[in-house]
Length: 346
Image 1 (cartoon, rainbow, N blue to C red):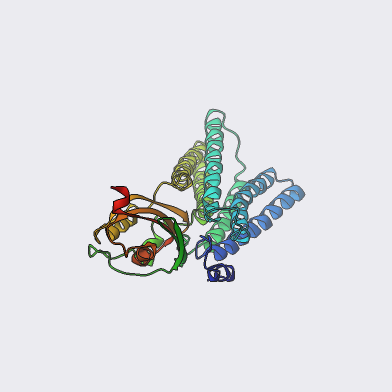
Image 2 (cartoon, rainbow, N blue to C red):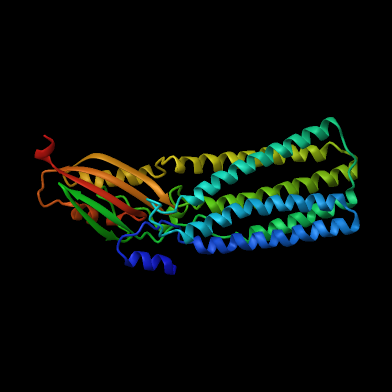
């Protein structure tokens, strides 16, 4: 757990909902930017010195790649530096999703540009300088594979599950911290484990996912370009090069759509974990109480927030009782409970 998390958590009331791998993913993203920047400068300078327009063009393409990575890196840095800024009501955990949504739009535009260029070359074929184009495509693939290696590993970013709760009973207001836990719910089902949570939509770090998709998409386009260029050179199938471009554009468009759909849902507070919602409801109602209102949504990678209104006949059931009851739910980092005695709502 990083230092800024410990400091905020010690204060007893924080809204830091960043993923557990936030700082590691931030460093990885900046490393990829550095790699792309070195390759970009080398290609542009080399192309200018040796009169290779193709090399300069690929260097400029690499600059767009670095620019896309920059969106993710700046989002990580800003979210970390402003994690304790009270102006952000529920913290900066969603900034990565906003960056991911922006990257998804950029990916869609890249897919459209590749598709447009490919169709143009179908209609008006241009001569291909295979001696330059193939080595450049191979070099681009190697850079992309290196970028994939830098971004390798768990890029879902599940949390350590720290958090706090808010309680409302009559006119009172009580705050209580609670930590993550593993337990069986009242129906005998096992609560989500950290391994399965890391694979769920509630746990996924969409910022590192967007960076990963960028480098994977670029690598896929490089592979298709190499195949198309080799076949065009060996068999004279010049149409293979634009065909490879169209296939690449469709693949990137599909990845863009998936990323846009998932990040857009989080930005609109669509509940990504209906199972947790139902488990929370049953945990309360199996004790004889009634859930009047329940909202669960994601406030950051691995961090869920819940607002619950409960009707109870038990006078001893105050907000502390329900916070203790809900401690079992891993990833439920922010809880607000309103307790309504049954006679008040009858």
